[in-house]
Amino acid sequence: MLFMKTGNLLNWYRANARTLPWRREPRNPYHVLVSEVMLQQTQVDRVVPRFESFIERFPTFEILARASEEEVLEEWSGLGYYRRARMLHSLANVIMERPGGLPRTASELLKLPGIGPYTAAAVASLAFAEAEPVLDGNVMRVGARVLALEVDTRSAEGRHRLEGWIRGLMDGGPPGQVNEALMELGATVCDPGRPGCDRCPLGSGCEAMMRGRQGDFPSPRRRRATESLRWVAACAVTADGEWLVRRVDEGPILRGLWLPPLLEIEEGADPAKAVLRLLPIGTMSSPELGDNVRHNITHRKIDVTPVRVDADRIEPPSDAWRWVDPKNPGLPTSSLFAKLVGAV
DNA sequence: AAGGCGGGGAC
DNA sequence: GTCCCAGCCTT
Image 1: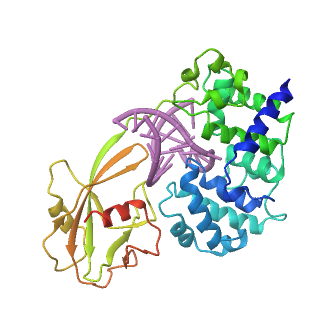
Image 2: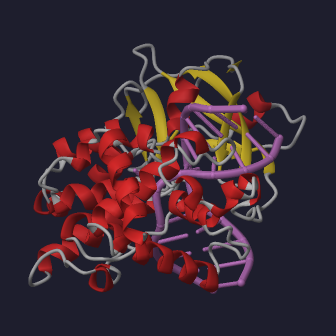
Image 3: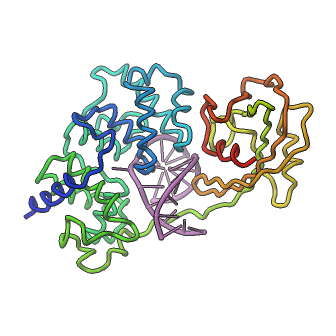
């Protein structure tokens, strides 16, 4: 009976699985690892193109390890959560030093930088066939509904119950396929707002569906209130279209990335006046306001006013300043940069 | 156990 | 506007 449910799930998966670049057989453990790190809090559609270019540039652990952190961050630009890129680079170096290379078990993978319970289980099961349940946002939602789980899916008890359920499914099929099928189901059928129960292979095995209570699971997460901020961006541009950028060296956000100088301003303050203090430029044209740009960083909503000035290509005052071609910065940066370029 | 970290897309 | 996403590290 239990096995039949697994069979339904795996048959559904074989018929409906998306073809994704990191799923090519035989599984390449490096590809599996890179994709799983990119997929942390980031949706598949956004990861696919970035995965392709990352693998093209850094095809192996060894090549990744030998690259500079700045090169890795440049390739990561716009993907967000930049700590992931730093830790992946660090991980590659650990792997190169480690006898035996990449570990094959979840418990050993868990010791590596940037690898938490989810990624350890995903790599171990998908690349090395270990029977280790993955608990990501998708699987937790599917499981919370199947079990009509009243406790928080992230609590110790919730995780334990979900893992038990998945281990039961793994008695009926290959663990990697079970994990991947559950994630795929959560991503494409068991939608947070509008679950497609009529096409779900788990059918009457879902307790929430049987009770008509799909919307009650999983229990909602507490969320920090968003904070609104106002920034001004000093956009110094040469006649050739080169932009002056500065490396962010302080604050908790976007550190290490290169952006036009940014400054927080008060509501109602004059953005043009604030810009003058930000630029190491002697003479400049009269500042010109661009269209405001909206940028969200975790719990912050930031309203950015770009102020453009025509500038001469002065010598950068320190190595924390550079002139770049905005179409191809060649430096680590945020998607905010492209938004500003389009708004002045 | 809780807070913080990017960014975009769906509604 | 709100919510979510193949989470992790730090305190």
